[in-house]
Amino acid sequence: MLGFAVAVVLFAYSAVGLGLKGKLPPGLPVDILVFAAVMLAAHLAVRRFAPYADPLLLPLAGLLNGLGLVMIYRLAESGRGGNPGLQVTDMSASATTTQLLYTGVGIIAMMAVLVLIREPRVLQRYTYTLGAVGLILLAIPAMLPASHSVVNGAKVWITFGSFSVEPGEFARLALAVFFAGYLVNKRDALALTGRRVLGIDLPRARDLGPVLLAWAASLLILIFETDIGTSALFFGMFIAMLYIATQRTSWLLIGVSLFVAGSWLTALLFSHVMERFTVWLHPFQGTNPTGIAYQPVQGLEGMAFGGIFGTGLGQGQPYHTPLVQSDYIFTAFGEELGLVGIMALLLVFGLLVQRGLRAALAVRDPFSKLLVGGLSFVLALQVFVIVGGVSGLIPLTGVTTPFLSEGGSSLVASWILIGLLIRVSDSARKPAPQPIQDEGMTQVVRAA
Image 1 (cartoon, helix red, strand yellow):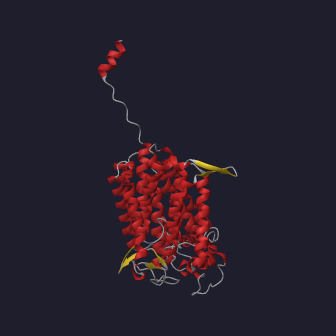
Image 2 (spheres, helix red, strand yellow):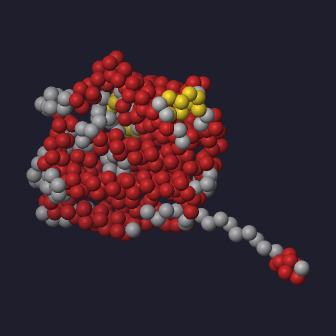
Image 3 (cartoon, rainbow, N blue to C red):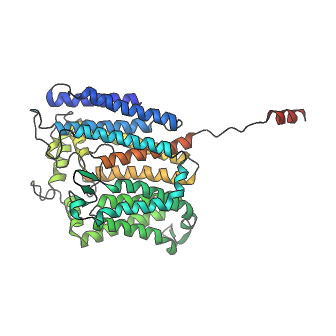
């Protein structure tokens, strides 16, 4: 399966070169060999340190990562070397090499997870430590000056010169461990019910504290960091893990109601949040290059232009959409692969989430069950938030598409997430140890 994934990437890379310049890309052999070597190293590490893990997790993630590399190459080469179309000015010619380097770093991080964490429940010992680390990582951009934290209007970065990192990507992983450890200890109390209203067992009022704290924290992220995406992922992950721990539908209803109410209240109080809702409700107002709806409308028109089967790799015009290489890379796939292509991508993401949830159902350790369930859900939620945003289903948020978007923070964090899924999957599928029989005792029993 991993060889098949590399073959698909090779075919797509070749198709981009032929579509752009009518010949194979000059860097094709080196890039594909490096990518294949990195994936082979990842495979050997999984076979060595997690031999019973789900065999589909790595090929699915590798396929998405490889297709992301292909699209980044396509966008970086647009307008260069006599190619038709416009040059994406905020992408360097070395963007593909840089993304390939980040892929290697991500694979090394995944290997480190497999080597250092032999049993996932070991992380439970660091529940509150990782919780504190996650909150600090979320808070750092809000405390930095705008010159070192604001990129494209969102105050979620740490930037110093050419170095930049988005700490929220790693905070999400640390907070997933914290939520899992906390809910394992508190789930019995949180599962207790109070009043029954309209056939739904509501929780006791005294147990609403953790949910209200998580809600308040998500609103603070929304207000001070102007980032709806991180706020939605943070609060959504907590509510999903709370539901997994307690099996109470009331927690889902309370969580969704709180988030919708908080988002609407924040939109009324802060103009930058209301702007997102305005663009969503009236996307074709302000569509000139300086208007607030220019980016989403360009993305929508690009996907519409792609139709059912797309224009073909390298033959569309995705470069008209600002930041197409990051927030809007899914629209580039929609334009050049069409509805069929993006449905295939969503199917790959769906399979990845399904394999993670399957591991959550199979593992016996409650902490591991909550952790991998929460991580699988947050991956699904992140894809839904960005794809729903660029397609106009929900207000646009500034999150990346896992494995596909340009950038190191998201890619490395995504590979760490895959490492955790592989580790829990290995624990779930590992056969139980066989009891050791004493031959002498067996003979005595038989004689008796």
